[in-house]
Length: 468
Image 1 (cartoon, helix red, strand yellow):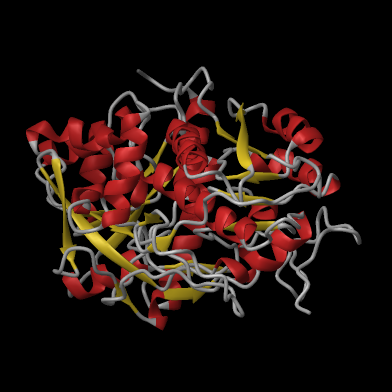
Image 2: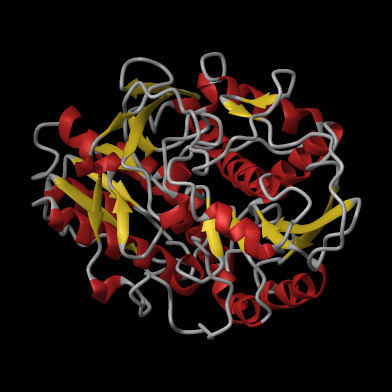
């Protein structure tokens, strides 16, 4: 089905939201626990991968904050699944959180309080309306992903609604107050694991790579960031001049010929897979050009693998900070996520793992507050978490400081199957300080204060972490 311009923008926004990292050590993925925690879970507690379960029975009492009662905690979650031009957009996020709510409640909730989830459908254009609804009733927003979150951010900040988001897109949402993410994508830092690993795999990568451009503003924003990151590591795109119309092209062969004549040996794309992108790759194959594709994590999808039955996309390399689903046998957290969502007949995908990790991050912090479950307490606990993997779903991130992973891995597509090719050991990441770079202020899209918080909607009474 052809997606119109707005639909392409929505999908492009998700491309920007996904972190396409690469980092690797043999770290097992034990998650950081707030300092001073002596309340260890009993041995019988259910775990999620390497993470002791934050859920279980208890005797928590009190109406301590909005959305909290003696026996329930009300959270909001959701996605853009009802967007007409791209139905099911980010559906996996809501499916994942719904499954995790059930998983947690089956263990007794959090300290005995069951979780009530209000599921929202922002349908791409309704994020502000959804946020206003959530402001009236929810304790936290958890694991959500709204492509147009920027339109909702002023309402969230004004009503002092904290969030542990599944992903953020807009610069003010990404750097907003009272906002944490299991997998941060800040405007001032970037994980470049995909670039770093490609450097190792392909000796001439830095000299013979070009970026596929787009007329989509969302994709262009991502391209600007990656171009800046390339410059930080002494890499200059070849500038073959291939810019695809966001509405689609009548023919992609002229673009393929341009790539062939330019001599690009590697192509990088921040766009998302769609029929137009597939047509370009098919045209490149017909032209006789043979570049290697090094694309961002949105190209790790069933849509791509199903399209590649003829092998046109063979050799597609994708940098990721998440463990691929194919590693489920070696990574317990991935298998657990897959099993839980599949049992609920939900959609299994990378963004679902991202939402799952954010739910676990929120639940761990809420658990530590015991009966005194307030927004302030949860924010205090979230601010202390500086190494987080969602039980092994992804490379270590620093949610407390809103910093991305400095790790990653790379998968390769052959036929309809993805396989981890770097590092060679399944389930491991490669890591190093060189896997992150600072982004030039000109490309932030917002102004930050000394705490790296967006100042656009900031008020004096937002909830800030208390360290004492």
